[in-house]
Image 1 (tube, helix red, strand yellow):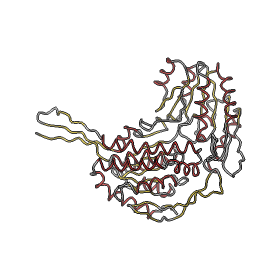
Image 2 (image 1 turned 90 degrees about the vertical axis):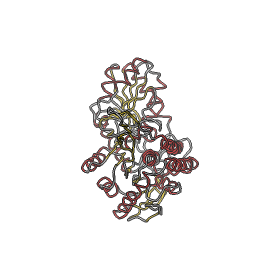
Image 3 (image 1 turned 45 degrees about the vertical axis):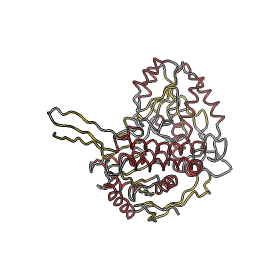
Image 4 (image 1 turned 120 degrees about the horizontal axis):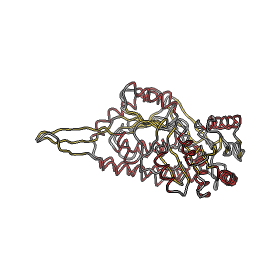
Length: 476
């Protein structure tokens, strides 16, 4: 059994979680301790006790520890990628790529620890100096989702540690293995006891306790809108700092002047790779009428060539859905779309393979109305809806007609339309001739409206959430 990591040592939990591979339900991936209130209390106390020492630690100590973590993750990326593919269902190449990204994130923030900037300003008063500095927030609770089980914990924990905060990580109960492996690497990195703590367990116990405890100074959360809203309410009630990433219903606009091959590739990758289980997935394909028939035909041809199967099998394009609950949700929305009158042009059925897994043929709906339920609500599976648009102006209107605003994309050969779309798409990230899913680790990540709340994640923008500013005056 893999234990919890609290205050520099390994602990049993209140319960045990056994995880199974979504590619083969008969395969046990691992057995993991699950925290109860007693373990949550120990971790919060440990993080609070360690906070003062870590905030006053040298930046070289932080940089060295983070660089060491990144180096080991990278050296073990094939091994850890296999674990990720087994427990979450990403294809092995995608899983290895995610592990490599986690390694790069730790190495990036190892250097950011050496670049914590401030300002020295002249006062409006004679003989007075002004210093503006950044200081750690304190104890940071991290609540991570299941769809990127090592990359998202990395892009939250690495900046938190780099800027001098102590951390309590709660991974998704569905996929604790990658976070446990990351914690085991961190345990040998030289961080003092209590600086990093791992609490696997249910959100209703661990996540709720972290959100409500006054000793936890900030919460960084990625997950559903409903859970994020509860986290926000709990943090607001005690005036704690909070950062939320909660999902999207992302549009990809295809104009009549687009390169068809580029557009189809962007749509296929953005909508269906990683089994569509990405908050940045292209779930609304908004296509100008002039190119609509050709685009739909090309999409169907491409979908026919994709292989769905076991995540570890060579040549597989799309792995299984992560679990039965998510599969049931995908199938429910597919039925909703049919009932609403959308035309199922391809897929949408559960598939049988050599192993018993949650395999779903990607679903493409066409001739969809933008008011339909399935075109407005996040499904979080390999389901995409094609919506016709009269022209660019109509397409932009449709793209912005959503409560979400994480990412938006456009495929066009027109500099005029590309430039206009980048300025007027109401989303935090915009892609031109690229899939909406797929972002770099060294630049800001986040959206608007119901997608995000608080400071941006990743890159140098992470300093905004994980530090507070202090202005100091000195009379000369």
